[in-house]
Length: 253
Ligand code: SAM
Image 1: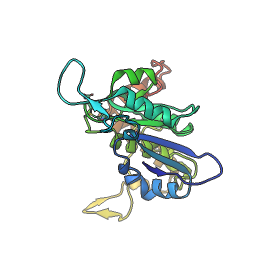
Image 2: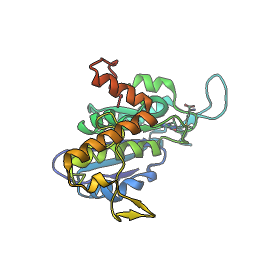
Image 3: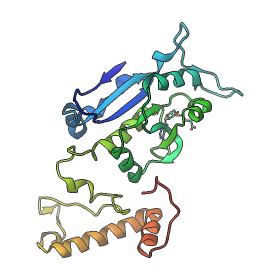
């Protein structure tokens, strides 16, 4: 079991990951913004090996699918024991990374970052026995309409998205509030030096020093990009602007 816990007196935000490959953690979360914050004790990461809860002498965690078909399925009893061994009287979100889940959105990330931190189950094989999903109330979360070979990379993505929102992790408070999805729109294009790149200048308005005009330009660019690339988000933003109610869905961006 790989266990990475920064020692502090208070209780920082904590992600607990149940996986067959604990050595995949912290992985990319050990560097840059998330890695520095982990080392500074601003959050904690615990990667626990599901196999430690196997009971037979081969330490098996999977078996063939009931009803036939290809591949293997993670056993309900082994995973339930792993969850129960992790959570003793704790109330925290229990997530299962799954392509069948609700798509992860920035709104859900914000909620998760405000809480105590989730328990995250990483599937492997063909998936996990439905009975443990139901019995332990696992919330299935997808990171996109494609199939990964395991939940670990999805868990890393989810944790990274949460950690950067934790107090003290990002340098500038503003950097979290103006980016894509924060107001239901995609972010406007960004520019920096050099002033001229391969014959292409920075849009003049951005160097005008007129903050109101810059803000208006950015807003217009955000709206145009969102309308062109994400009609789903654009429709919601338009409904919000006209005061129309959209169906309540906490995973909506
Ligand atoms: N047979 C499953 C299906 O068709 O839904 C796919 C299983 S996949 C090979 C193995 C594991 O990878 C899943 O149990 C899940 O934990 C993880 N996974 C794969 N794609 C994912 C996605 N888009 N989002 C989140 N987790 C994913």
